[in-house]
Image (cartoon, rainbow, N blue to C red; front, side, top):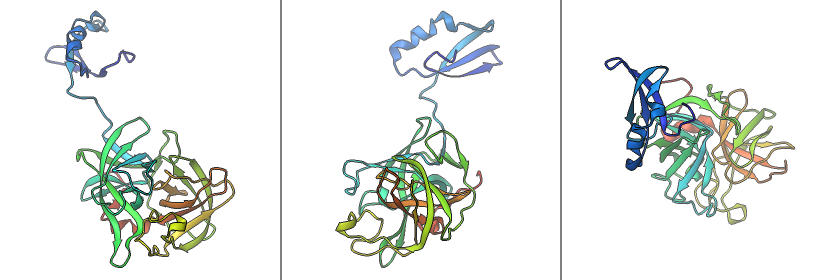
Length: 287
């Protein structure tokens, strides 16, 4: 039964004393052939009925560590409109994820549309509805909240720490100290780790360092609140932005890096203590 494409689930109809086979078949011309399919006429000796669902069954939960694909494309990444989702969060009861503010459309962050893709290829449509601001310097800590367009979707307090389907629980965050050993996961380079060497680092916006792709206002530095990680074996490339930075618990959101896929990267992340500036709250327990 599992091998038959289109079957979404099985149930029992007590009124008719038959097994209900729930299917999704978008092609109207094929529905009658399913109704006439003798292979489905009985299961375990019981009569069956076929019930056609109006759409495919989708996963209705959202966790951190999925892929983000933003539209319209930020001019910072004209050929690679992608980021990584950080940690699950909620805003006024609506589910979403925390990621980097520069994952939004440059200078038009609020309202940015993004598609979330999970490990089981579940897809959620998201909209950027909050990013942290400062009256003097705009996008200050490079954090943003992307909420689900489908308000029936719930977030779960978990995140993917690597490319597998294994999940970690999103415990309450901690702040790092120099020497703390942390890992990050990004969709481009996967998982790698390093040691904190600076807890008061400031990204600068200038053409030499990539322009306005650091999540701060044009020609102004970010706050000196970023954390810098280095270690031989650490990797980071475009697309890893927004992903989770973690130890035994969550620590931050990947913001920028000295790019390398040969173990010579440096990663800068924004601490999670600034998430509240986005208007959202990190999700650490089910709701």
